[in-house]
Length: 191
Image 1 (cartoon, helix red, strand yellow):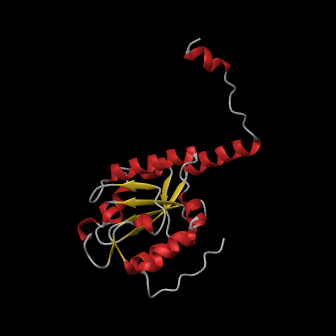
Image 2 (cartoon, helix red, strand yellow):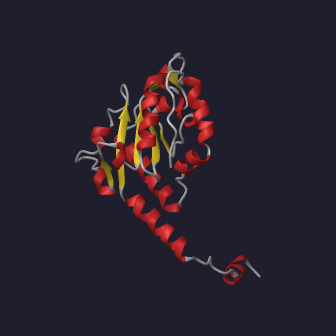
Image 3 (cartoon, one colour):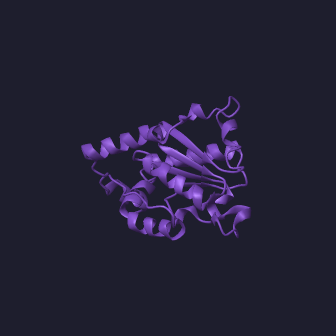
């Protein structure tokens, strides 16, 4: 009996109503991403071309918004200092769940060319969950759109769940945040 015959004897996964509804919601979420961009230094230079007619991110369902209360996705681009990390955390916590983080460029990944500075955050993932990393210094709009395509695929599959990880491990993230942010009393995260 070969692999093919064994496949015929397997039962398909039984889908409940809630599982079907969850898969449908993930599909819809992936098709409409509202983005707030947080660019520091040179980090935001490739985001405006991404939404112009040449690259047209809106055809993929990626729309820029002006406030975190409306956003599903935050793009963090450029280097982060301790002061800007405070603001990024505040913006992230103002977003409604489910929410996704796209780290854009070398600086949020490893500090970029400022990696050895006393005031640069080298690994963003220690302070908040990151769903997609788009590498480069600065990544071109094509790379950013490829990152969004990857994010959409993860959302459809139900694998983009950094926001759940943040809720489940808030004490770990707060501990890491308090190590570098010494002058700010972290507000309670109230779900």
